[in-house]
Structure formats: C-alpha cells, structure tokens
Amino acid sequence: MDEKTNQPHEQGGCFCMGVGPQVTSMADNLWSRATNDHFRNSRVEFLKGLRSLLDDRIDKMSRSGPAKGTQVPVE
Image 1 (cartoon, rainbow, N blue to C red):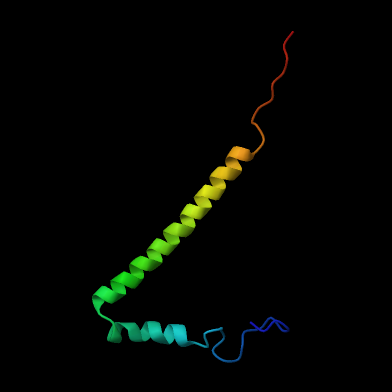
Image 2 (image 1 turned 90 degrees about the horizontal axis):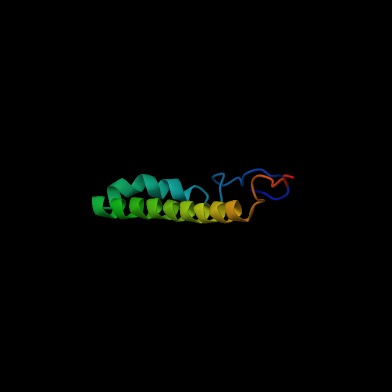
C-alpha cells in the first residue's frame, strides 16, 4: 500500500508482488501430498493460537469488569 495515496503498489497489488499466489498455485505440482498436509496443519494451528489469545483476553476483560448487580440496604 502506498502511504501517500492509500492505493496498492503497481506491482501485483501487494507487498509480495503476486509471488504468494503463484507459489500456492505451483504447490500442487511441486510438493507432495504430505507436504501440503503439513502446511495446511500449520495454518490451522496458527489460527488456533490466535483463538487462544482472544479467549484469554476475553476472559481477563470479563473478570476485571464492573460487578454485576447493586446492593441496596434494607431497613
């Protein structure tokens, strides 16, 4: 992204200049099924890690919030 114009770079529209999608499309021909499975599993594990971080943050925010309900003295 060009910082001045907020437009994608001319070369491929991304920082990698289109290399990422090309490598992915070649993967079926270059890599074995086992290699593809390893990379897929690594992406799944990465996403599980992000989910764990979010769950921890949600838990901390839930515990530190204001107490629910109000105590009212009864005479």
